[in-house]
Image 1 (tube, rainbow, N blue to C red):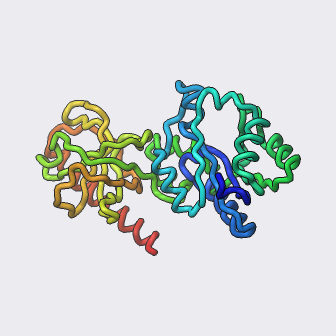
Image 2 (tube, rainbow, N blue to C red; image 1 turned 180 degrees about the horizontal axis):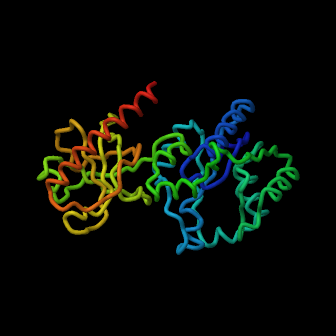
Image 3 (cartoon, helix red, strand yellow; image 1 turned 135 degrees about the vertical axis):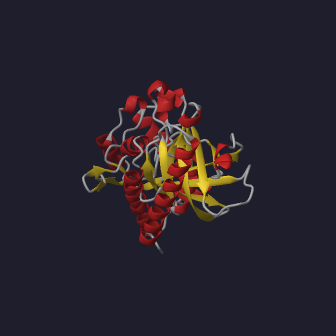
Length: 305
């Protein structure tokens, strides 16, 4: 990489979710980039190492790869190195990884990582290993402490747990933004249209969907946000089917089949339940829409500007 001959400031990790802990590290990286007049570089892996080393226990990822790249761009990071993680690469010792992949190719002057960072074969490299290697090679290093939000530690594993429990508002506090899913609108069974509440069915590559239930959401189409309510579930009133993500967008009339959209989950309204008749379901949907409007109005007032 000829543009790295003068070196860089660098951080490493999986960076799934880009939560407040990650944002703290990247803010430090950017400040060091400005101070040293060197490009900021994020070194990460694809796929997630656990998907190769122990796929049976690999966690569902908070972000797709495209979303990860987008979030890095928004943080104004100069360079992304996306290392293909393979079984062969996994056998690299911490010392060889540091010398070959970092020193030889990237020439870092400063390295910062989180407090729980590990690297190299069987995760044998830890913070002490990194500090020793940096000292031996005259590289400045900074270990970033855990980021607490109230009594909660900002971590990808906790965010996954909160999403799987439907606590999207709690996850938002740790992410510093709403959790979102991207995808394409596909044709569904038209149940919503028959009930008088047409819905947009999302086909997504996101690995995590919030717990089944109804949510107040923002529906982003062509960079414009619409107020909406989203049902994540199996539509038990009509016989249990596959999991579907269906959004009723307030005031949107046009045909959007095939369009790329983003759904931001703001707050859960209620659990999914089976209704005895369509009339009871229609009455509940009206109530859900009113509740969603109240939640979203409050959310927009709080986050205006």
